[in-house]
Length: 132
Image 1: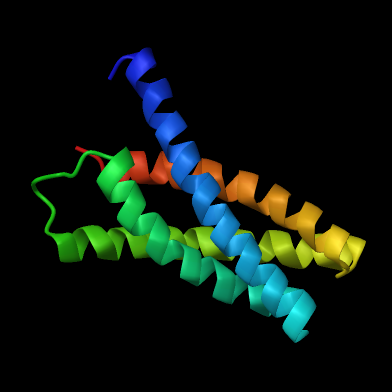
Image 2: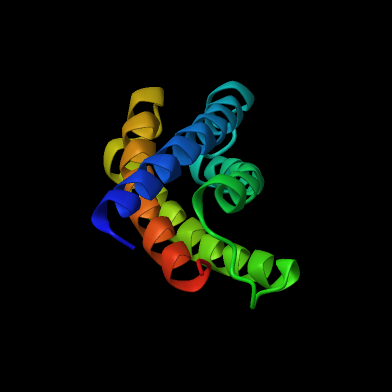
């Protein structure tokens, strides 16, 4: 894949990721700030909900499907990679809220940083194990 195609793919990945972030962040803030749940627990629920959207959109618009993988195996790999991403996300949320508190601004800044770290993991790992 040439550099131009890789940049185009990364931009599509970014657009799908931005929409997944809106879903993730919206659910996180609803659960942590409106419902009153712990931000780390809230981030697990929000992450899982956005995962479903992210799988469908990523495999449809970003990555080329591998013919040697069944949909079941593809989804299993996607989930395993995403669970690793969830662990990275949760560790970042824990560290950030422990350091800066659990107010709306602290949770927001922490979530943005966690999202950047997880986005790098997601692109590299999905490109490696899911794309043709």
